[in-house]
Length: 459
Ligand code: NAD
Ligand code: UDX
Image (cartoon, rainbow, N blue to C red):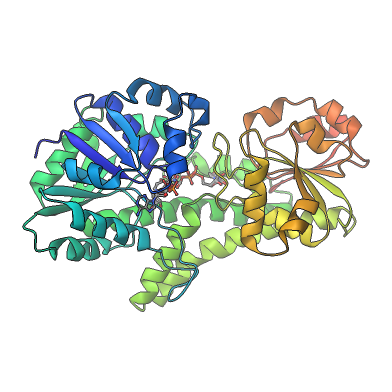
């Protein structure tokens, strides 16, 4: 099928950037991104591109170039479904917070709603593309909803998981390691492959069956997260043995079989994907009674939770076993640099723990708003909203956040943190002035020369 119109349901961190890059490289295809969230769509349509709902380096330029030409943002979901030949489902698939599988399984209600919406509206044949990350065999459920409409429309279902990482989304989309397309109809796969082939070399476009494609996405995230938990486990051993985790990571990373990427010890991984996708993998394995498989992967999450807890425990212990009434300055709240996304950020959990010990937290993050910080804390339901407001404030500058603080906790690896006037920060802090570098971004000896007591991960 020659594709001239695409609809993407879900204008989030994946739908927005992915469709913008497809639009840029396929000017002959009209792409409409739709969402039930009217505020989000309005923000995507804002003339001031600094107000786009997703911050990604390079994204605003591509949106400026394509918007109102062949890229459109709309809340009119039905019209966009009706007129397109290909529909991407790119809605959120969070961990279930209720009922069977609570806290483990993927909540597929948004995906099912999309499938039902497509089934209701479609009058012509459609290719439906799973872009959301889904448990293996979800295409079966989508197929069964679409194939039982009795309206004579033929639906082809493809799995086309997205491998972009936030903060580098545009670069990842422009230069992907591979594009994965799983499906049953070669013709439908060809239609999608030719869209990507307008900028991705053909040999990087991989074809598999539906189930391999769905499972490859969960597996890729599980392997990536496993590397972080592995190096974080070693970081704890380093702290007891005078080994240095950066040196260990470098030494093992030079082995070409291991490779050097994703070996940065940290306060723990965050983000909307790793934890949710591993929990999902564990749940799927348990549903087939594969308990050893499930337990094996669950350990990656257990280690990550331990790493976050260990960071705050160490901070409390070092501050003479109490942080009650003390001010702790946080540099960073986002789950990684170059994004405004805070989902599952380690900062949320470390702050929550410290506030339970009656610490006052003052946060500076270059891209995260004060409102977002409060929403993240309130979501945990540990204490009242009023108490979160009392204990956690956000500051407009790093210097304000760290003034009179007993300790600095570096939670995100924003580049600008390295270039601050650390002599000024030291002068303005309570003494002894402590730094807990959860990202190993500062130089230990320079900080000690200034006068700080410096603690990092695995050193
Ligand atoms: P997101 O929450 O940023 O965006 C999802 C959007 O879908 C929201 O704006 C929501 O309003 C909309 N939506 C939900 N139900 C809808 C419906 N029925 N009709 C119309 N719109 C609806 O989520 P995201 O980060 O873009 O992730 C989307 C999917 O992609 C998830 O499955 C995720 O696991 C996967 N993924 C995410 C990333 C990432 O880095 N964020 C990377 C790869 C894959
Ligand atoms: C991840 C996957 O990388 C991406 O392929 C997938 O499509 C979505 O999930 P993302 O969560 O956006 O992407 O960012 P990523 O760079 O993977 O970082 C995830 C978390 O791991 C961050 O909190 C990051 O700080 C942390 N991390 C990453 C480490 O602690 N150490 C590392 O070496 C790498």
